[in-house]
Amino acid sequence: MALLARDRRGPKLCAQLLDSGMFDDRTESVSCQQYMDEGLWTGAVNKMAWDAFLGPNAGHERVSPYAAVIRATDLSNLPPAYVTVGAAEIFRDENMAYAHKLCAAGVPTELHVWPGGYHCFDMMVPDAAVSKASLAAKLSWAKKALGSSKLTPKL
Image: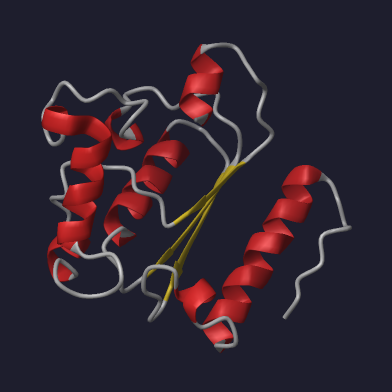
């Protein structure tokens, strides 16, 4: 969305809060292979989602970077980004790769990889210490990005 908003010259976005993003339709990363058959979001579910979204183009070079943002070659002039992902989930490596690409493009980027976190861990087990830390970190960043101190976590 941020890439499309930039290229269409609006709407102007102030920030990107990216939580366990699905950025790469090729599903070839190490974490994708590690968690192919484990967790809530398995490799089969991931493939089904990309196939539903992209149809026969999924995994092919003709996929637009607006659909699979990891394919973008120019990430400059995007709003600051907060990228958060569990260390034990299928999207770990593509989130880390996207954060790296944002940094390389000069986009202020904060990356959090949560030890032991699987896909949607903070929603599935909200009382876990790692979930509380994840939520607090997201809210703290969002407050700064939005310039508001009215957001308070319900921990």
